[in-house]
Image (cartoon, rainbow, N blue to C red; front, top):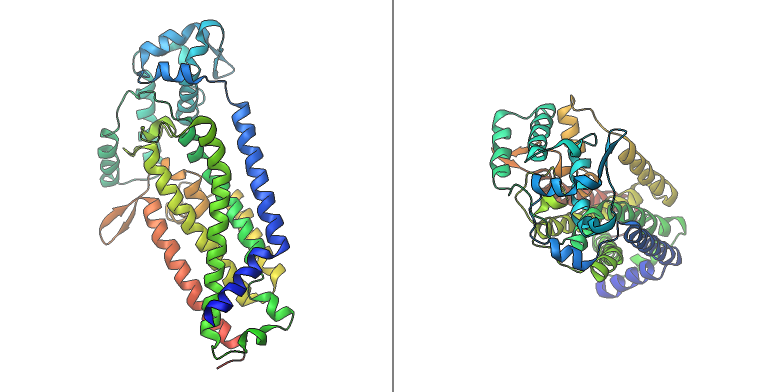
Length: 380
């Protein structure tokens, strides 16, 4: 019987017209955004990228580019013309570096490793602004010492673009959770169908857990479909080359001595865990409110707060907690947020602490919702 009810709940979720339309719309929108970003990117031939593979991004390379560099209105501009088209791949990396370090950098006047010295100054300044202790600064200096400098260019367009896409994926999964799971417990109450599910030898505890399990299955399936709608175009066009290359080619201000592939795996794990957490919170609100529109409004309110609310650096504790939310982690704020979370005397990176927090929220939502469900329904 539990398997039968589980399949029944899954069928309701997967066959609901609104869920199908929402998922199809999300996939089409992400596909169009992905393909448009590929179309708008600076044209880069694979031959040029392979020719530059292994090239050190240093003062000598910048000197070679100076004939096509201009400094206008506080911005360094690259003019890809003539024989300099072959430098387009490395120009993209320099664009990312300048944007991350300081948009006002004048690359035309830089010599030697001045760009890396400027990066080092910016890192020190950010750690100071974020109020890190000397012990925390030492922690990051040790990590930074393991990062190869100067950076070395490697082909990485496929995995690099996918890593940047996780922020959008997080927002879409939250929206789909709000649309698809907000009626998990509320619809039966609204339509007076609660007792149909309770007409078995199984009581409220089993039924509640079955519905939760069905919700988790649905959201994880949806999360994978949404992820594939971005991954397939990027890997299909650019390939997977660059997965094992240094993270700093994509996130120059990161002091983590990791590869792009390492952080892809971390981001994917956080993404799936966040999807489960969104589902758990959505179903908890559905149990508490017994009202689908109220649940959706609550989640949309959170989304607006997520998008527009930021805490200044002087409120370090609040900012540290706020930056543990899923979309902040998936937005890659962890690459420029150097505050550590200390548990049991050990320092943890924000994404490490966040994964524990999300698991605790899922368990809390499950237990609180179960108690609420018992009071609302008639059963054993």
